Length: 317
Image (cartoon, rainbow, N blue to C red; front, side):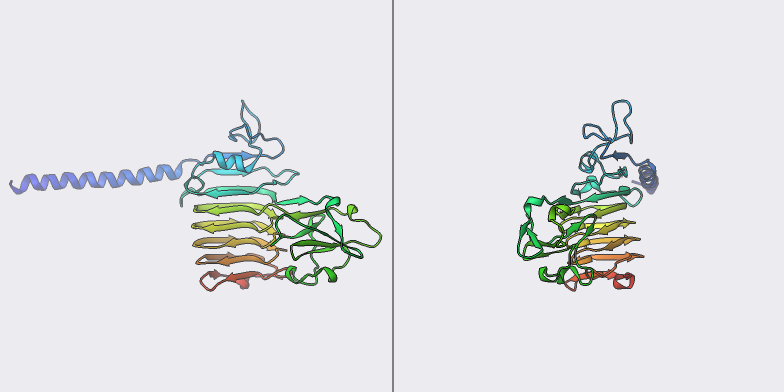
């Protein structure tokens, strides 16, 4: 074989290679510029028989009623949009795997629009028992963590941290979790049924597991027995933007295992053990976050292998 056919073949293969590379970039660009599919959720007007493709009922479809239903329907790179209504969303949800992931061009998004995800349940008056004087107590199903609420705020004593509160030191209108029981001190002139008391009940607001390129935006997450948001493991390039994470039993956000999460412009306060909890070989980037440490430390590191960028430098009183 002379050199000429070989050279021609090499030229042809080179052109084919360049064409394939170009086609690959064109395909990637096309995918990146495709509009994200939006799934809508409304806990007042929605219906979980709908496909969630419209924010209002139209032509046989409309918003889902629950976040869980929208996540069941979702695919990689989609956006789940919540309507802010007069009622909180009372559910615990999980984002897991490829179908709840995105890429650097099109992340998977959960957009709250200021809505509230709430894990509390009211406490029946009959569930309380007297333990002497003005103090009553209630035994929750989950005993290790949690907060008692009076009206819409945690009832722990404001003069000390959640973990330091003790039944005998409670003032009227205050409560605490002690030895697996919720304790509450009523005013001498009032009975317990006159108080609007609730407690953290659902375990975690949003669990993230084995997901990539996710954004959760503009959402209030409160009243969960353990964590508001928990990045359990294998979570990378996740951003929590503009969230309020308050009144959860352990932490507003818990980042554990091999996870990489950025919190940007978030407020985490009134949580039971820490505002942000970091454990394992995780990486946490705190950007312009307010982490008031009255109820618990701003950031708690469980072990020395986690990496915190920002940390207490961003804690605001």
